[in-house]
Amino acid sequence: MDNITKSSNETLSPNQAGADPTRRALGARSALPCLNSNISIEPSGQASKLPQLSTQHRKTAFVLKESVFLLAKTHGIHRIGFLTLTFADHVTCPKEAQKRLNSLISNVIKPRYKEYVGVMERQKSGRIHYHLLVVLNTDIRTGFDFEEAKLGIYQSASAALRKEWAFWRSTARKYRFGRTELLPVKSSTEAIAKYVGKYIAKHVESRQPEDKGARLVRYSRGARAGTTRFQFKSEGSHLWRRKVAMFATIVQERNPDETVETLEDISRVMGPKWAYNNREFILSLPALETEV
Image (cartoon, rainbow, N blue to C red; front, side, top):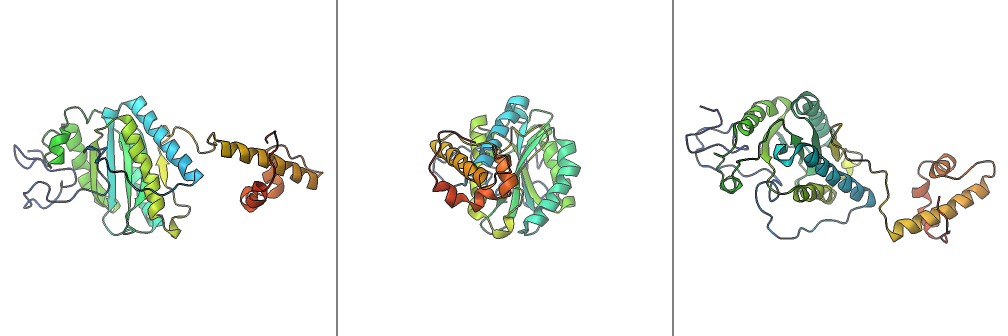
């Protein structure tokens, strides 16, 4: 008998696998954090109240969503699994969390899956967990009954998917992780991309001072759709570039022995934090018709 199967008619859920065999009631354990609508249950329709994102976080969320589109286009959504990783203990330190995750990625995730995209998230309690989209070598979506899954019945899970559950049940604890859950993606590529992107906002909402510099999103080598070194096309960004052009003219006038024609030139003369240190002055300048 498969070590995930309870009987001929009942199957342990991915987050129940490995639980005390005396616990017979399906759904006896609660779902893992944040694993909801766009994975196995339809959206509730209630709009979430998310914090206002900085430009950098908006760029990060944009690249993340584009990377999800790239994964689905390249490998097919039927081979993508949504993997939630929690720690066995109450981990709140981002350095400790990243240390354990790095070990898991190097020794398990990279060898086992073709590509991955991962996002760090804090719960309101401060506890850290991770959500990953992983690309498997086989289809885990076809035939999976999402309606039964909502009731805690996983009989429709394929042999390949049950094999993944068994694998994580025996592997996670070796890297000091606790409960894990791997499920196929129910909704469309657009919905899952939007859903994953919201984790950026959720992280910002629960962000703590020690999170500064912590890696929020990580990608396998072929999963990243681009970098965050771009500017959104807007009237505000256009006006900023024109004001920077005026600032560059001033820098050139005050440093006649230097050549100031590019942003790199400004950084060389004024230092890498020139925009931050001179932001208020730059915003007060008139806008030139030309840009740096």
